[in-house]
Image (tube, rainbow, N blue to C red; front, side):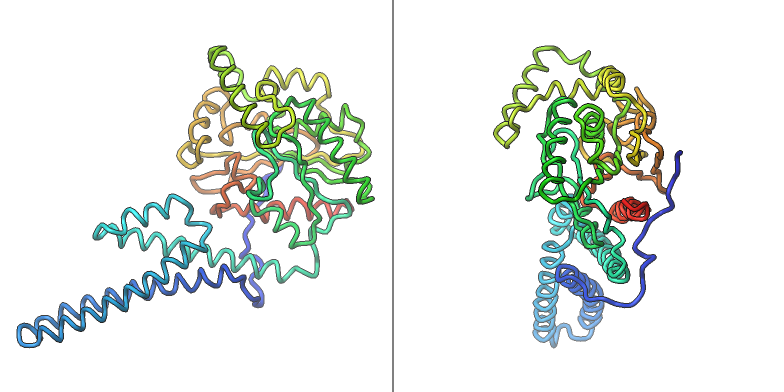
Length: 409
């Protein structure tokens, strides 16, 4: 069954009031100061120009003194405000911060850049404040307090890290709403079979240590293939209550077949050796770049599907999710590069995986919000911590987990 969810937004929870986190409070104060700077500078400039016609030349010293006082005061207000938003804003990102620094010294362009900064930060304060109120309004319900804990399984070429969370702000949002969250902790690049064995061992360890009985698995990208192997071939079906795959290439990536065929063997070997060496230094016990890539091709997934079957697993809730990126320019590197390749070979896609490769299980959700941006492969795990117009990724995951709770899982 395919379904397209309605737009999710924290606006729905705007009831009552709640104390804002310190970061948001500082960000909001910074926005206020920058807006004060904008309007008072405009008013002061007009006033000083008008005063010049009256005060010159007899009272030019007083006019210069007034100019110096205004400049000092406005400079103080500006720098306090700009430092506050630069230190606390998530949505400014690197691009807008660089624009602000580069254009800050260019007349007229500095005003355009400042308006962009103010607008971006104001929207961030509004959005995040609404989300705080929504979470506060439903805190007693613990909508994500599932019977079994949540296990988040990452995709290829990433690791679970305490420094930079692969899943962005999603785990924190689930935990605020009552969920217990664990991570797969498997290595970044391995064949589906090897990664599946790692995940099976991880699930057994969680169940044994906590006594939880089962886990609800949410797996992104190749992680969905790894989990299907773990359930089908590693004997952990009885320990998994549900499997939700997020943007998983269940039928492979056609452009990956093309690239493997076109890239010279020598170049492939150099890339493989460089990646495996780096991954081993970062903690992977036995990284295998090429095995991971080959299992993501259409040929590789066809082989895997013959080995483990393609049907849902009896007694396990099996769901899949896919999304569409609408333009190459709206995806961040490297998805802005791969999008066109995938579109050429496979049609509508998320920058890596095509629409036809996503569906699996008993329930498929296709995400294509209104607007011109779309949702990329990375957006689906909040990798860039970006608030996307028309799609609240954190609230989407809250909905996924809340549904598991309603099912008694």
